[in-house]
Amino acid sequence: MTDLATLEAQLNALILDGRALEAFELLYAEDIVMQENTAPPIVGKAHNRERERAFFGSIGQVHVQLLGSAVSDEVTYSEWIYEISFKDGRRVCMTEVSARRWRGGLVVHERFYYNPAA
Image (cartoon, rainbow, N blue to C red; front, side, top):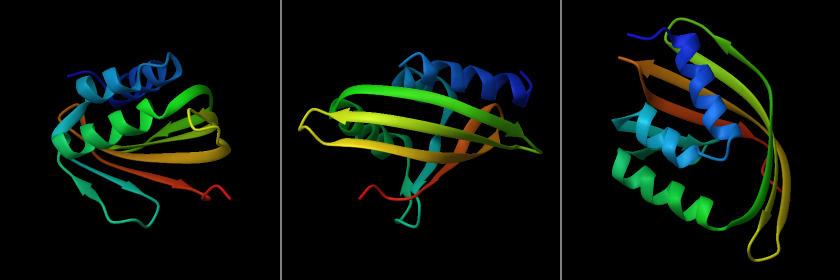
């Protein structure tokens, strides 16, 4: 099995390359639980795939910057700056932390922490 630091680096590189949906298919478990801040968690790869496709389909342009990441025992953290222009004309700039829990080389839980855009 690949070590966690390598998996985290691979995932982050795909996101930086604009291939987040590919990363999702490759590195997320079928029983993935994803959560935005304090919103209710979304359970299962099929439900999260739908949500991810809708989100990325609404984006016109995005600039992503990785500020840093850390690896602990089966947990990784990445801090990001996102500048997003949506197809409907909205623009959002936000800093986000992604906290990921891994099992067997796949993400099984991911929670995003950020201040909601005004």
